[in-house]
Length: 93
Image 1 (cartoon, one colour):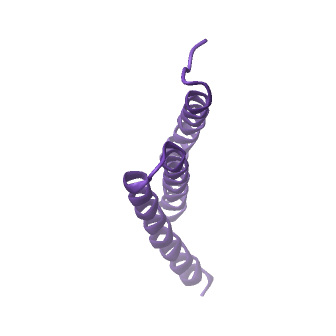
Image 2 (cartoon, helix red, strand yellow; image 1 turned 180 degrees about the vertical axis):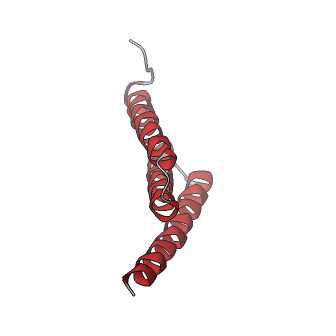
């Protein structure tokens, strides 16, 4: 019984996270200001990273965990670079 509940919960999580990625991508494309687009990009990469983690739990594979870690690192650095660019207009001083 608990395996059935876990499978159903992971399936629901995958659907919800895929919907979150779609909504964040729509906001990314239709954002009025650059700050809106950066926030939508952050939300999209976090939801995608979580989708990878849920997929890894469902499939029992460790490769998705490594991909999620790489994605988290790249997303964090890109968020910092975009925030600095929006604040000062340049990335490298």
